[in-house]
Length: 87
Image (cartoon, rainbow, N blue to C red):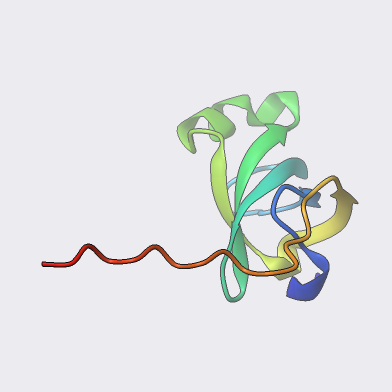
């Protein structure tokens, strides 16, 4: 999946063979250059222990995301960086 088609809060179907045995659904919490941090929201019963060991969070490559279910927020303007305190 392409980075431009993903937004914060989107639900995506994903399959990460190294960590989860079956495809799962996750909510995008943070977007990186080639991957995203997902909060695992729905998974197969056989993956309960895997999801728990990951604290229900996983970083997945965009290529592992097979479907965007939507629901996220499109940010028209990126958030302003926080100002550093003056010394």
